[in-house]
Image (tube, rainbow, N blue to C red; front, side, top):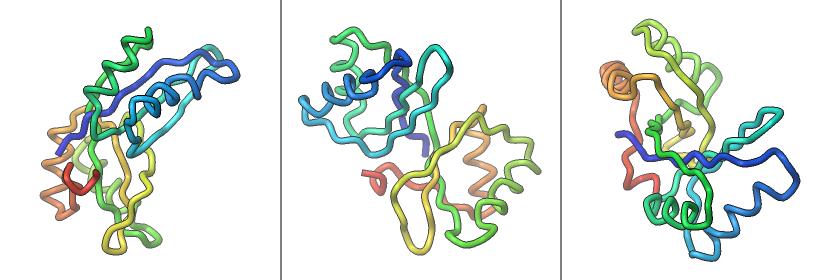
Length: 141
């Protein structure tokens, strides 16, 4: 299952990360997962939230640029080599990973990682065929 992720573009300056997060907190919107990547000029704040549509509206009303993209939450065996196995399955199928980040959820001795794939539908099919579990939206929130 694909999950919506918000990407918010930030200036690379002190305090810029707190500003959109304060807006979401004031609107009583809880974060499920967060990631921050930066370049010299700007940062990209990536958020997974249950109320992503409301979060997007809150941010945009305050002038923030918030784009929506799909990520896939994947159960990965929480043991040495667990991630390597999953990555090998994807590589053999020619699936490209644009980026990934960890999510603070553990289920049944597995860690949950979020992936942004070039082709999420193809990635989901390949992972399911290899008996690698895709985390459902209800389990995320």
